[in-house]
Length: 303
Length: 274
Image 1 (spheres, rainbow over the protein chains, first blue to last red):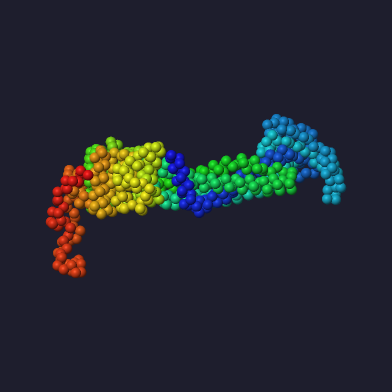
Image 2: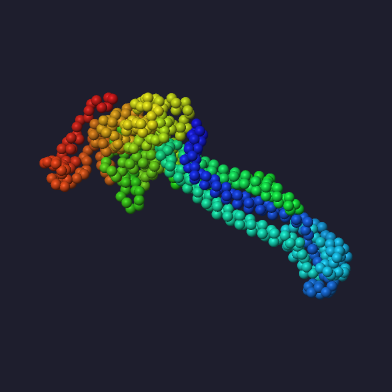
């Protein structure tokens, strides 16, 4: 009986406030699309890191002849120095480093020749132009700082280079995009909260006679307030559903059908990722509505 | 049933209190008129009973409970024991008479079969049998007030509060409403009615509590309305106040000796028997 009553009150309120309800739906739709985009960008960054960090390694370049680095004052790295560095890697860095390869000058030259059979920019280099290095695979790519701190400045080590640095500009760009989307989302969410508040207020004012009677005959606070609360929540959740559908379509047609076909060596976010963030978006919409209803209600429908 | 113990109510700090150290005790089944000029504190009195406001000082007990100490989520339980009737009826215009009365039961979660049985019964009792499907706009003022009374008593409250229920009605219709309230009172319901209607108070001869600027100035069993405060100063004949063509008619301020004497008529014996 009461469920039916609440339902009919909600439908009645939605009908009476159609334009405002549509506004709420659209604003939550847009704001949650931004929230979802930010989340998907972060998911994309995560995927790229998973994919690429496995492929890259930390290179410990050993002193070549004629290096200006202070640690290379003694000339080309000696076998003793190399052994000392390997010893440090095996003991102090045993947790951080998974695998070590030694790349000698000859190995480096072979690889160079393979990559540039006609010489590099017109110059034909020799084995002595190459530099020996230790290639480290890290257990956790984020631990680069520790490895670099321990190995830099040791005798025979010219420099420690993290290949991940190559990706940093890309990740930085994606992170900035995430921040932009999140920033816009915050502004839009604020607009959504204000709109929901106004909608509930209008609804409460247009129904204040009913509300007053309900209070006088002893309806519980919950029953008086629930219709308004549900009205806001329904509109907001409808907006979030639209946002999920929008993101799903965007990922389906822009990423899966187009980007993935044209640049196919990168792992992309998929429709599954959209479905994974969907509950988050819907929950956010509901929370938004409940919080704004709660504050409005107490002013307009207090018992 | 209702007990005010040294109740004071101040709306804004520093302003004159709306009620000032009021102590009143209303027994179960009593019929009490609350009289006094506008601003004397009648509405505040009713608001405190309904727990629409809390007293600044003192205690208000309704059906044995200190309403000021009641937490807000318990207020609905208190209000289910009270019925309220207003001067302006406050019927929902988009609902029929039946729906208006049923609404009061629906929102407190009464089962459908109870509503189906109770509402027609109450409508019959207030004299609206056969008019269930009418919209409020299709009813006369008196009938609208009957519908409002039906809504107030459909949950069989122990106390019925009426705030000038005859204020918008002509004397004959008012009399019908008073007969109805009297009948409800005879079923054991305590009735507290705030009113300006001296004729009705004088005819009913029930207990009268008179408030003046927030103070109880009179509490009489089987009382009358009493003196009205003079509305016009006793200026005698005045060309400004005399209506054109009124001849030699002299305006007498209400409250003059004649009016007072007229107010002390004996109650019509037939009234309570209705």
